[in-house]
Picture (cartoon, rainbow, N blue to C red):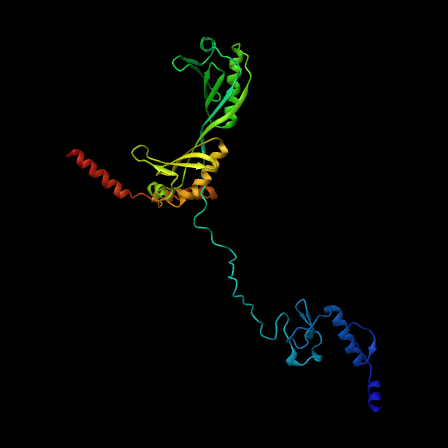
Length: 327
């Protein structure tokens, strides 16, 4: 009872927590803790923190230092105990920036050199009349046909009296169809009852060049579809059945493809590339320099300058040539 009277009879103090009231010391301590909880919030205590509650890098002990012992003091944002390190032996660490591949996938340009198409006009054609009245025509009596040429697109047509026409020289399927319709219109202007029927692309010839040389002898020994007769032809003849195409492969890396359509030519190149890549020749210094220039041009950077010429050696060579000329 005496202790309670002594506590109750304590002289009032002015609260320093932004409060204008005169309160006792225990009441001021309670208000300080309440204000601290409102500012920092209540969080779950983690293991090894000794009851420290921190929020946004601000320690609770920085506000009321007289209420916490010195050995429980903790800096903001630091842990009192050793932090365990996470180790995972099952997976290898992935670098932030993976290194670039040494060998990039090369780009191969396929050139379509010739597209052959055929169509029918569904009427009998008088070849003599076409040869006398037509323009840019040539009558070949021994072959029994008339050849007619166009400038745009630059093509040649072989016309038979039965009404069948074959057109060659186009570089795409669209150009082949345009040329075929122009030939049909030219025959119609000569007085024939022409109907444009049965148009189809017969054959497509394409060429491409691999970015490396090919060891064709080893290639022909491994694949039975390859036929190599150096006495007859310098290249290897390789036949594909899906898609149906015939390829001529040369040691320099050049490939000639014959197929039924442009899409079949592209599919044939995609099929033959992994087969010949296994038998590629090592790159020479000139090939490496050309490849380096292509990569620089693709990246948009300026190509490296050529090595400086030695003028002294050049002058000595000229003087030697002059001496030989005088002698």
